[in-house]
Image 1 (cartoon, rainbow, N blue to C red):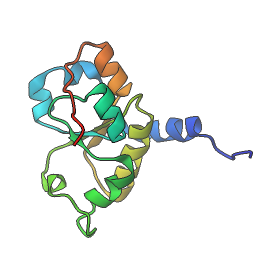
Image 2 (image 1 turned 90 degrees about the vertical axis):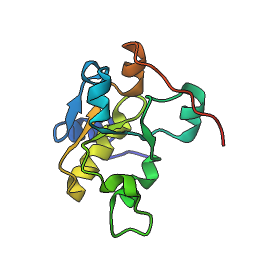
Image 3 (image 1 turned 180 degrees about the vertical axis):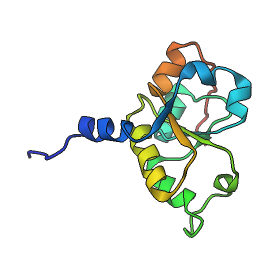
Length: 132
């Protein structure tokens, strides 16, 4: 199969349209409290690697449905006026997701440059997630 556009190009294109936030900015706990951090990774990644303390888990495949107030799956945490900070493992899924959020009309959305890997590499604390 020959693709017209591969994932790397899709991510690169999205990154020209979305804002990033550095891990250094988010290492300050006060900065994190002013934002709604959304972990887009698969639940198995959370169980295996943990997550950023205080973040909410939203599986990537459900984000659009949880954000839209007209969706039967709308989640009340998105009714808060807090800026959204999306992250995944490397920042690829979160760049694509931030792009979609902007297209939906979410104005104050960013994603973590380098994702969860960059967070861990910078010494950010990690909260374990247990299987339910």
